[in-house]
Length: 193
Image (tube, rainbow, N blue to C red; front, top):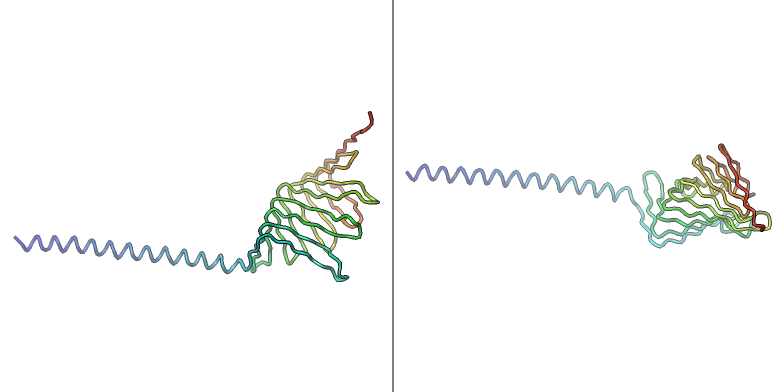
């Protein structure tokens, strides 16, 4: 009679041992997958910066671009840089720089192309040639070296006496001209009584 109870006891120990081995193997497998994922993230991100103020100088030694962002992440594989809530100043011959604000931005290959997205506002304060100008859109691509900005999205341009709505634009940041692509509507705002 003791013999059958001993084999039943061995059977339960065997089941317990097999269960422990299976759980250990499963745990090791999950742990290795997590390590692989973490290594992939570490390998793709090669720089994380906080409270960034970056100044880009052109070949003449003048400031051409200034970037402010609370967080910047650079990815090595595709040489892209992601900016959280960026504030960018693009300098030109005018005393007033163009200012760009948005929720996000992504720069490729250094700063040759910067894509701004979500609540993008492009501003230029009045100078001797142009009135105060504000352009709002959902996405905007800036080419700092070419001094151009473009979008295919809906835009609203606001100046002291006029508001313009259009779909798409190409702006020359150097001379202040804006080419509107389609569905252009303007509204004149009179400030006289």
